[in-house]
Amino acid sequence: MRTAEGIGSSAEIAVLGAGSWGTALAIQLASAGRRTLLWGRDATELARMAAQRCNARYLPGAPFPAALQLEPDLGAAIAASRDLLIAVPSHALRKLLEQIAAQRRGDTRLAWATKGFELSTGLLPHQVVAEVLGKSLPGAVISGPTFAREVGAGLPTAMTVAATDPQFANELAQRLSSRNFRAYTSSDVVGVEIGGAVKNVLAIGAAISDGLGFGANTRIALITRGLVEMTRLGVALGARRETFMGLAGLGDLVLTCTDNQSRNRRFGLALASGVSVDAAQQSIGQVVEGVLGARAVRTVAQRMQVEMPICEQVYRILHEGIAPKEAVRELMSRALKPESE
Image (cartoon, rainbow, N blue to C red; front, side):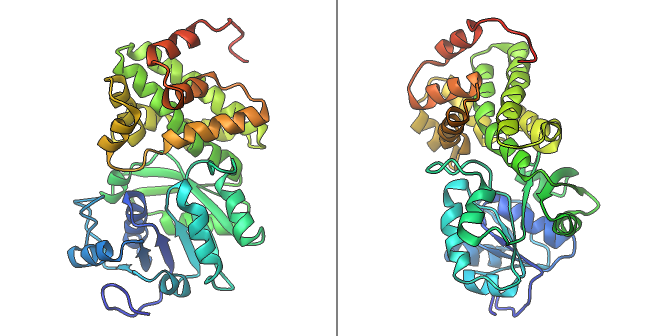
């Protein structure tokens, strides 16, 4: 195998997706002493990253460890690595899985950091994986309150690795963990994925509220009731309630709703300033997953007959053009009920 750096190697793990999050995960794995390959679709950009030993476009200031190599050939990356870690947006997941299906090794194990329902089917990532690669393939999801820049900088971080195979979850957690990075394990794949799918939608809503000047009381009410909606949908889909009180639920929700490193939060703030949905997306310059995510969450909630009023209003702002202040009025005028409902 030849990498973009002209080095022959056999990697312990290949990260597929060279955006900010894929790059950060590759840096973390390599910093923990794991030989790691990083593949991306843009061979020219990978060559530039190999020469500069950093991802200047998405993660400037985070140099690559010596154990990290760039690989422009997807087939070579798959052949060199038993374990694959996917870090692409949800809309690109199925296509990448189909490419993997044609080239994977007999002993391949797969992890993914992809968040969100598939828009066309309403499937969670693990369900898309099962459709394309089969249910027998060992799989795991990685999620939790993490910003790529801080992981790339080596700042203390914790997240969750969920898999139905405890051995695979433990091995992957060990690989990720280092002095400044702690990975916890879980067997609740559905719950961890639901947390990652819904939090982006709620973050847009919280940011719109902040941008309109509604204050801290409103923000915390949206986060708290948003957590109820997330939990309600998760339990309906078979998740465990306690998962949503952990890193992949409450932790990721609070992070995404309150810090401007979140693309979804910056997008919501832009909407509140009066710009259009398209202009707000263009101003971010990267995928804002909560935009399509709002449509997918609404579709699944309707199918499962789960009430999610905050997510519904975010959907209406993004895809039906209602004014944010009108959405707030509708939320505040809903019939009173017990908090437990």
